[in-house]
Length: 494
Image 1: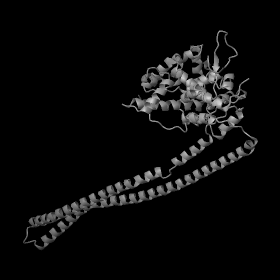
Image 2: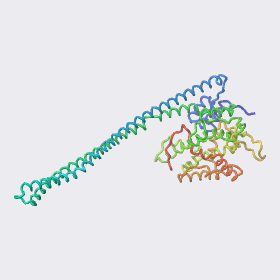
Image 3: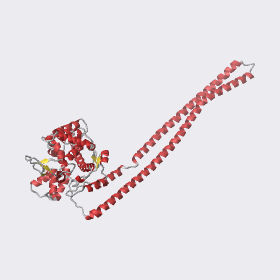
Image 4: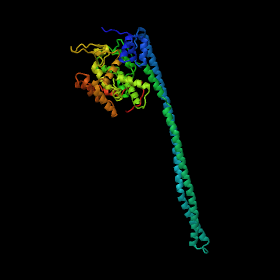
């Protein structure tokens, strides 16, 4: 019969899984730490502590309905505020568009008037020539008639024509100079007006980008949802699949959305539903399994990436302080690196592709329905010879191993990743992953499956099954998924 551990024993087991040196030293010295002291040390080491609670009649019949009603009221308020914001934005956009259309109308009218004026000025020289020739002939004939006998007609005509030609040339030159000046002035005014218009329109564009200021509101909404879907830790409870599915529906947890947006909510389960195998639909069973395991895998990967980011920053420094040296010593122990080899630590401290982790978890746990997964949270079927484990029902007499069990599911994920990153059997896996890093390529699961022959006794047959699980269930879609509450980090290609 399964022995029920006390809350203090669960905390001690959690400290062993995460290799908390301070608690282990106290245990070696036979100092009895209280549950509060154990919780304080675990929180100091940034370890999530399970919280036991039991549902009561009051909680089921009063608290939960009230909380659902309050959530719906909050959602209605959020939706109404969004609708009001949309309407206000449309009104502002309509005002700005109408003002732009009116200004463009006046601008076109002004431009057309300028073009008409320029055309009229171009006609003036032709009118001047006609005017000159008409009056020249007229006055020539007039003077010839008056002085017909005294003045030579040809000479008089030439004199009069030359006079008017000179006068006409002066007038044409003066009018041309003035028209040229007038031509320059409208162009300058138009250019100035265009520049002023551009200067004026730029701030309006910025106002359009800044005015709605929806980003802070979105962040607040995300924070609210994260508070509702905070780390869901339910140890030692007979969790039913129907409850889990209702929770996923309440928080709008959809795998299609995760595949498209590459973001998953930080929902952490400590155990699988006991009746997961009773789901008739194979697709629904697989989706439920992925929804439970994916956030745990992504959370551990992001923790590793944070450590790797810190390691690469330390490597880039010329000198390290005492805190950084202490951190490096701790990581050398965690990743079992000898002689302080920084390059080896950099190779080992890296992610396990989500596609591989999900495929191996599905294979080893029967999509979360195996006895080891349900009784001991053992997702990846890791063996142990000296730790606490579950005895396999069918095994050879010459083998005395057990399946390592864990207090929570995330501890199993952490132990699995630590196993692939430290054990000598998976050296080829780490070297292949390191080559991809050096070439600045993405770490894909299908590129690394063949290096995991040593994980099972079937060898190459096992890796073929993993590839089949990844491709059939499109698990490669989850390789770039991050947590919705994760911080963006700057990539360092070292």
